[in-house]
Length: 176
Image 1 (spheres, one colour):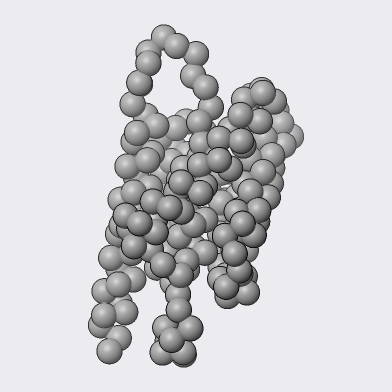
Image 2 (tube, helix red, strand yellow; image 1 turned 135 degrees about the horizontal axis):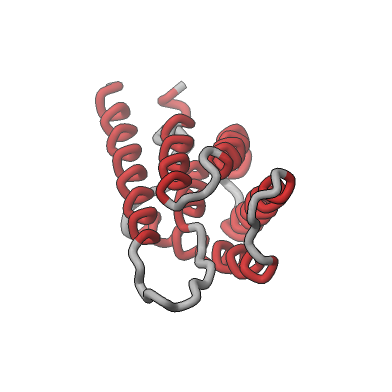
């Protein structure tokens, strides 16, 4: 009986890692060279939040830290800072997902929005504390708005395409 659960977890982890790596590689492609880049949504963050709120057993903390550390390195951000912030946020979500799983999507979106704002602002504040170059406030606001607006689309993609559904009560009882 534990083999299908293990296989489902492994498949979920592999799918998450593949999607997160794909999103990171898409960000590396120069789509319009020479143009001033506008900050886009943090789709990897949206994917991680949505996945952890639906299937926290499929994504271990090491996978979250590893994929965001790789993203930090590839996107030339301070190594480990964004990964640490996302890891802390994901663990906070992982401990509260049981209480939140039966609530309406609007409440999930509000909580995810608050977490997104907190993460992006904390990232900027920590960078400023260490006298690193920080993005402009306009860019920061645009990135926050884009990420919050993209979250429902990521959840819809996860639900319709990936068939990622929240853990049911029967699955919780079967897992113990």
